[in-house]
Length: 179
Image (cartoon, rainbow, N blue to C red; front, side, top):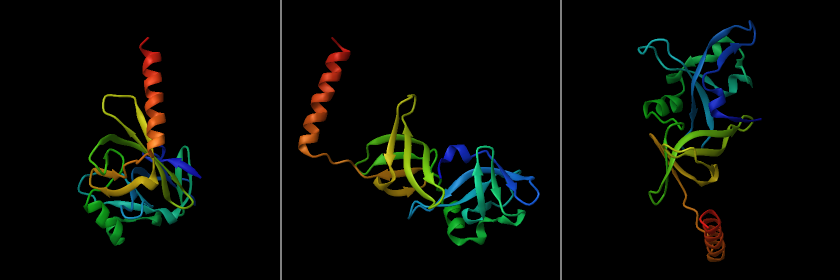
């Protein structure tokens, strides 16, 4: 199943045995090296609480109105999983990160990402420019690195023939817009 990350954040986590709400999803933890969704970060009630997660393998199903997990024991402390603890210490979260090309061009702020729940792989990123409704969809294969508050993507290199066609199309659209 394909799902947008923003649709999961804020959802209640529900135990399958009792059908009761255990907690709420605060964020999604992604492996910065492989782009794989690892776990869901649980909301804290108090700032001094330890980070808790639900590992993706313990999720039974993600519904529009909640995330169904096996048992209450599916929620564990993040530090129990070394890789996840390290990602949280480095504060690497995708949503809200600046998206830049490898040449430093700012694309926008990551607004959302689409991922496959079966393979836990990110498929696309959606970046939005500040103070604009313009959004750009970027294929995950262009991701070069995921860092603290920054995602670097590969520049698109167009063949000269395609650059010429896009230039002609751009001139045509500008002429039509400004008669």
